[in-house]
Amino acid sequence: MLTLSHPAPTAGGIFDRLDTEWALLCADSSVQAAVTDWLMTDRLADDVAAVTDSWVRTLGPAQLLATLRPGGGVLSDALTDAVLRALLQRAAGRDRSATLAARIIVQAMLPAAVRMTRVRVRPYGGRTFDTVGHMSVTALFEVARSGRIHTRPGRPAANLALEALKLLCRDLAFDREAEGEDLTVAEDLTDTTPGPAAHAHADWIRTAAVAAGLEAAGAASEAETSCARLELLELVLDAMETGTLSSADGRAIAWHYTADPIPDTQAAMLVGSTPGAWQRRRSRAVDRLKSAVQCAA
Image (cartoon, rainbow, N blue to C red; front, side, top):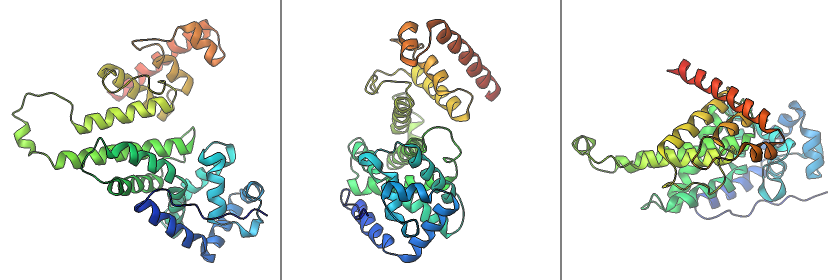
């Protein structure tokens, strides 16, 4: 039977401490019993036991983490999605088990938290890696407890990471603006240069658009993305989140209404459709998006 060791420290500071805390959590027999009961109740125990080469009655946090980080940490397969969604549903509760479920989710998402932290230490200069790391972990925990993720369509890990990134960017921008000049002074200024909050929001939109397949990774930098393009992407992302548009509908709009549109013939080939069908999809998607915007106005 496979012996699952505790994960090595991910970085330093907060992440090192979380790994140490995780080792203690895995050694707690009451936690193991709780996890086993969850998996049995959710009818996931047999599948988790099979992929971790474990006995059903010995399943615990370590086996959950191994299931949530298959393939070198890539959250990808159907079982991973099912386990994470079940944990997110428990984390939305208000008892001790909810806190434990959120803690397990945070541990599974630590690689994402480290990436978010590394990318944002430099733009928000003056903050240490550990400080931003604390904020990344807090954002993940808050989103896991929010009860908003497990009901959304699509990949729960991607939804969780994107929502946490959005919260982190807003918190960082808010703190940075709070440390600046008094806002009453700014009222008399004519400079319309976007502030940190606007940059953070634009950064989140671009990241979410890439994850949703609306933009190619690295296709548009901060300087190259127009305000109109960002507004369109945000409208499409919101419509996809509410179910007004499907992923294919969103791509049909985003790939066409851009400075460098993807030709319908090429787009249709990419999605396994025909140019005519792709054009009709875009037309219907635009109509639904317009209706949604008008209803919200």
